[in-house]
Structures are given as structure tokens and as C-alpha cells.
Length: 205
Image (tube, rainbow, N blue to C red; front, top):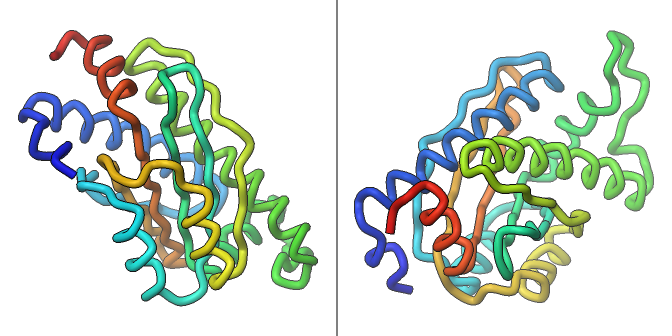
């Protein structure tokens, strides 16, 4: 739990810039889906513990979660995409209804159909994020197939059973649309080797 304190100012700035560039590209992609303006938060670096994550998400209402891993940087980098169920449905409706006539209500679909759509959406978000990271750090990453949880009670157990890191550092960003007010957050949880590769690539210790 001392990872954040061990990072120097240059390393922290590099990680925040990485997150900022990645989420900016995500915001552009989501903005095109929603046809709305997307505001993004300043990235924050936090000491990560699974226990704290589970406690925080238990306090929220119904959430949906996508979990992905990223290959080709190092051993294990994990991604979490978390939205409220309401916001997920709203974003999914925009995602599947690309013309002016919205004739598909994703909330009326089966759970498996909803998970499939959210999986596709999560893949777009993660791939867009890491396309920017690949360009910035001259690496070639590959995002795995998302694992999806669409029920709040299930989501907490899903996080508990799926997230591999028990502690470390998380890079947290969020986005909000206007006027729909769709919001969500993305947590990037790298292992120490991933951080070392990224820092070495851009020439910092």
C-alpha cells in the first residue's frame, strides 16, 4: 500500500498524463456514440486495495461492471469499467440505436443480450484507451474479452472473485455526458512490472 508514496513527481506526472490521454480518447469515442459533449475528470492515483474497492461499491446502488486484462505489457494489468445500471442502459441504448429512430430498448432485452451489448461497449472503451497508450509508449497491447456483471449483488461478489490484485496502485478517471448525465469510471490497476516497462519506455527510472 506504499506504491503511491514510492512514486516520485515525474513518475506520478507520467502516469497521470497517460490516464489523461487515454480517457480523452475514450471521451471522444463515447461522445460520438451519444452525440453529446463529454467532460472528463483529472486522473487520480490512489493506493489500491480490493477490500476498499468492495466497501466503496457496496455503498452504491445497482452497478454494472466490466473486467478486462491487458496483455503484452507485462504479467498482469487489470481494467475495471463501472457504471450505474441506469447509466449503462442509457449508454447501451445510444450504442445500439445509431439512427434517429430508437427502436431498441436494451432494458427490455434478456440479461444475456444486455451483457453482450455491454461487453461490446466495454471492448470499444478499453481498445480506444489502450490505442492511445500504445501510441504514447510505443507498445502493442491486446485487451482481453470482457467479463461482465450486470446485477449489484452479483457485482460485489464478481469484483471479489475476479480482481486479482489485492493491493497496489489504481489510476482512476471518470466521464460525464451533457445533457444526458451519463457517467462512469475506469480503474487501471497495473502490476509493478507494467509500471517499470512504461517508465523505461519513456526514459524515466
